[in-house]
Amino acid sequence: MTIHDRIFVYKAAYKRRKRDVAVAGLLFLATTLSFAAGYIIGQDSRHAPIIIQKCGANSIGD
Image 1 (cartoon, rainbow, N blue to C red):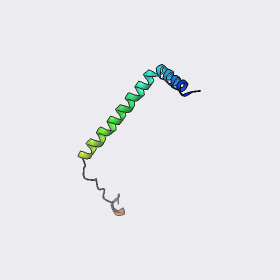
Image 2: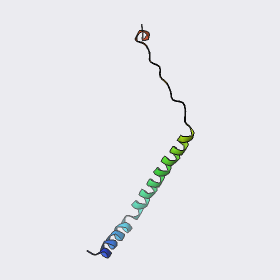
Image 3: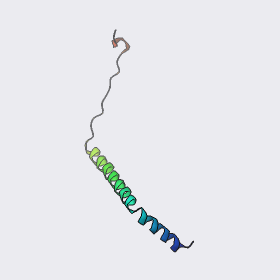
Image 4: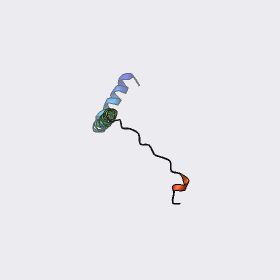
């Protein structure tokens, strides 16, 4: 099988699955943009950490 035959096979497969390839590309693009936007927004809103205090054993229901 020559390189031209392989290219023809790939082009034919792409034509059959053109819609699936487009949907997968749009899904990848939307996911990437969503994570990028969340990362950028997350950098701006850094909050102080929540500190949880330890409770002594005597203060639990005694």
